[in-house]
Length: 285
Image (cartoon, rainbow, N blue to C red; front, side, top):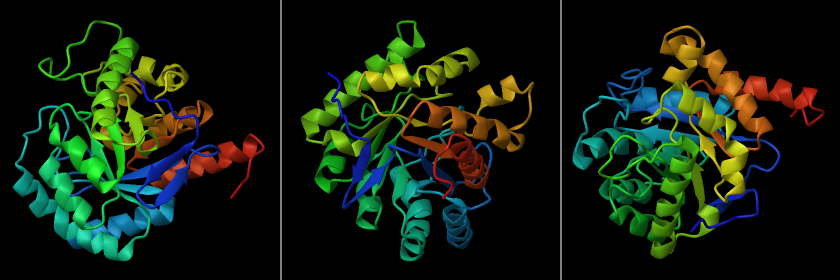
C-alpha cells in the first residue's frame, strides 16, 4: 500500500525541507573514477570538497555523494571499496558544509558507516529491494530516504508493460518494506528511475506523469541530469552538452510540483528556476 503524505515537507533527521513553493535542488557529487559524465574529476577528497562548496554556492539545497558508478554497464564494487572512496570525502565535506548530505548507495554496510560520519539521507537506487537490511539501518537512524524504482534486473522486479504502472507497482513494494521497518512516511521521497532500464519514450512518459504518480501518494525526486533521453531529444549531443536540456526538465518538474530534482550543474538549474519563478509572479529570492 502507498503511504500518503499530504504535507510538502521532507523530514530528515533534525530538520525539515519544504518543497511546497520551490523545488529542492540536489547537487550530484561523484567521488568515482568512472561515472558517466564527471568520473574522476572529484575523486580526491580535496577536489570533492571544492566541488561540494561550489555546488552549495550555486544553490544546492542538498548534496548527493556517490562512490560507486551506477551507469549502465558499470562494475559493482564491494562495500569496503566504496567506503574507502566515500568516508575521507564525506568527513571533509561534513566539516565545511551545512546543507544535508545524501549518500547514493544500496548497501546497508555503506549506509551504516556513512550515517556515523554525518550523512542525513540514503539514496537507494534499488528502493530497499536489493539489500533488505538497509531499511532497518534507515529506520534506526531516523534519516531521510530516497526510494528509486529500478527496472534493470528482472530477478528483483519484473515489469509487466506500462512504465507508469510498473513504477507505481515498484513503489508499492518498496513502501511496504519501509513501513514494516518503521520508516516514517514523511522521511521518504520516491524517484521514478529515469534511465534505469527505460528508453527515451518511457523516460519522457514518467516525467509527464509526475502529477499522476504524486497523486498516488509518492512525492517525487526526479533525476534527469545529462541522461541519454535528453541527448536523444537533442539529436545526439554528448553528456557534457546536456545541461540546458536538464534545466528545461527542472522547470517542468517545478511546474508539476515535484519535490526535488537531482542535477550535476546546479547553477544552470538554479538560474533557470529564479527567472521562471519571477515570470510566474513569485519571489525572486
